[in-house]
Length: 257
Ligand SMILES: NC(=O)c1ccc[n+]([C@@H]2O[C@H](COP(=O)([O-])OP(=O)(O)OC[C@H]3O[C@@H](n4cnc5c(N)ncnc54)[C@H](OP(=O)(O)O)[C@@H]3O)[C@@H](O)[C@H]2O)c1
Image (cartoon, rainbow, N blue to C red; front, top):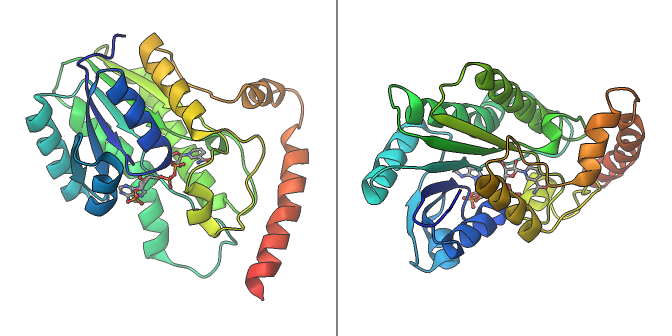
């Protein structure tokens, strides 16, 4: 796909993967609208070079307004990149309905709702790229709530593929540990980052290639691809999980003090 002139909306554009991808797509000639929660952060990152919209995607009313504004500014949407998301790192802790609902609303309900909004009784071609995670298919200690959101999102996308209309293309993305604000925000500056690690520029490049080539899905990490094949016949996750459990327990001891 030639990205020149394509009308693109990216959520989570104020930081990390979304920001790096937005910059790449702008360079490629796409007309990009960046979405984030903070007007200051968006202004600081894009300096008024593109149209930006403030929207907390956990709120459907804000999504409605954001999509209406993006469509009116761009005159339609060719590519929507549903990338906003976050994690909690730590033990499950005290029951907290609001906290649990907030992460599910952001990581799961929002992309589903956005896809519904963009496709219900609409027949224009749409590419819907969605940032899932390697942890949408693999479990690690400390990330159980986050994993459950990304497993749910992965389940939705795989189910939707079976029934989707022909005018919609979905491209799920499965990054593994990427150098962004993600881990810091999840559990503080000492949150262990599971191996393998990738620079954010590389992940954004893989996503751009996914769009250009119309790939069915994007797996930036070759090691993770091998893991996905091996796990069908060998319990390869056990070793990683044992190592991450040691790191999680060390993190927990530090935070219990
Ligand atoms: N980094 C990794 O290792 C990794 C690995 C696999 C998957 N992912 C996924 O990649 C995506 C991007 O993460 P990142 O690594 O780029 O992390 P990041 O640097 O923390 O960026 C997250 C972005 O999502 C936005 N966001 C979070 N909650 C939001 C909400 N309720 N409404 C609107 N925007 C919201 C943030 O906006 P604010 O600036 O307003 O907070 C920020 O722009 C996420 O879906 C994450 O789950 C990340």
